[in-house]
Length: 81
Ligand code: SF4
Image (cartoon, rainbow, N blue to C red; front, side):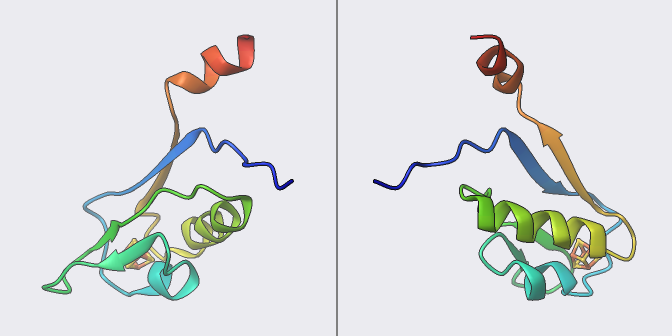
């Protein structure tokens, strides 16, 4: 049976984005440009280890550091259980 990994972080894109499309190229499951092509948005939070690694790669590859990865509030509580 395949176990599901719990990813306790939330990715977002801030206003520094220059719409270079690098994040979408690296992790198309999670990032896309808006319809007007003016910025990137998170279209889905990573729910698998594979998508999480690709999202982290996108974060590290962003030329203006516009991608943020924030631990979710529940991660501390989950860890303490
Ligand atoms: S890699 Fe960074 S600058 Fe480029 S589209 Fe994604 S968030 Fe915007």
